[in-house]
Length: 356
Image (cartoon, rainbow, N blue to C red; front, top):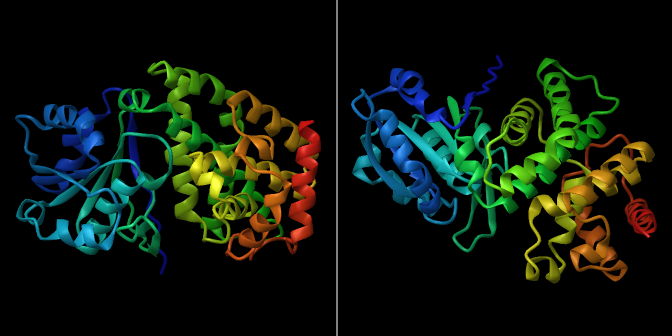
C-alpha cells in the first residue's frame, strides 16, 4: 500500500483569513511554534484571524534556534503545547522542521506558516535535525506533510530579500537535478508526477525571477513575487514529496557540499542557494547542455548569482578539495553516467573560460 500526501495551500496578503475555515475541523486548540522574529511578524495576523472563533491559541513558543532533538523534547513537555490539538509551525526551515517533527512524533496534525521563501520545508514531510551546535544530526523521515500551508505574501515581501534570492537559486536545481538524475529510468506514477512538476522550477523562475526579486527588495507584493514564492515553496515541495532521495538531488548539490570544506565560503557568508546556483552551471557544463548553460548563465548574471569561482572567494587551487568532498556524498550515486573528478574539473574550467 502507498499513501501520498501533498498539502493544500493559500497564498495572498490575506491568507490567514482562511485559518478557521481550514483548521477548525481538526480541533479547537493550536500551539504556535516558530522563530522569534517570524512569530512577531505573524502573531497579530494569526490572532486576528481566530479572534471570536472556535480556535484557541494556547500560546506562542520560540522553537529554540536549532531544529534539534533537545528542543523538540523541551517543547513536548510544555503543558500548553501538550493540550493543543494541532501545531502551527511559523518561520523558516528550521522553525518549520521543529514544529513538523514535534507534530509527527506526537501524532498531531500541523499547519505551516512560512515567513520567508527560501526552502520547501513548509511543504514537505522530511525533517532535518541538527545538533545544538548547528551541525547536521540526521534526517527525520515521515510521509506526513502539513495539512495546509498559509503563505502570507506580505510578510514574505517584508522579510530579508537575501533569503528569497538564495531560495530561487536552490529551487531551480530541482528541475535540472531531477531531469538528469531520472534520465533513462522507468518512473512509476508518483516519480513521474514529481519529475514533471519539477519543470515548474525552470521556465517560471527565469521568466519572473528578476522582477520578483526586485519586488521583494522593495517590499512589494506582486503577481511575479507570488509566482516565485509558489515555485520555491510548493513546486519544489511537491517534487520532494513525490520522488525518492536519488531524484531529489544531483550534481548541483554535490558541488554545494564540496564547497562547504572551503573556509572562505563560511567566512564570507555565502548562502546555500547561492552556491547551488553555481552548481547548476557545473551540472549543465558537465552534461554538455550548451544552450541551457548559456540561458541559465545569462539568468545568473541578471540575478547576481555567482558565475565564476572568484565570486565565491575561491580559485582553481580550491577545486580539487571541492571535488573530493562533492563525490563523497550520495548526490550522484544514481546518475545516467559515472561522474568523475575530471568531469567536474573540466566543467568548472569551461565555466571559468565562459566567464572571461
